[in-house]
Image (cartoon, rainbow, N blue to C red; front, side):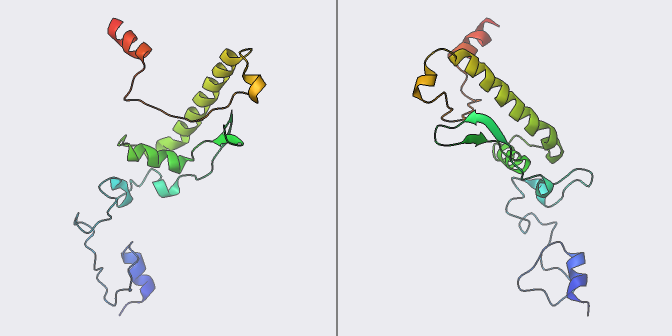
Length: 154
């Protein structure tokens, strides 16, 4: 009979209670016994060998220069959080792309905030404690009136 460490090398799944046989009780090729997240995140069971998996993505977060309405500044999502959000929205993210996408996302937000502050300068925001961002809210499915107008005229 093989040891528990041998079984762990043969099967990537940690079983409770541990199996007493050499054969894994889970059929990893059957979609009904795979992870319940496999439908949404198919790479969990079969990650490409050359790219990082979501579990290998950084969980480090960067604090922005954008003040919150509550206290402190906004904190940008980590690579892992960004990946999970994209997957949740069915954007089919690639884990390897997160190292590029997250810094671009953060830089775009910082640049946009700089433009907001230029526009707000001298309009009285300083009198009430300074301009602060209440919420980040992307609405890709709801174009603004200006965006709709521009799409109509080409």
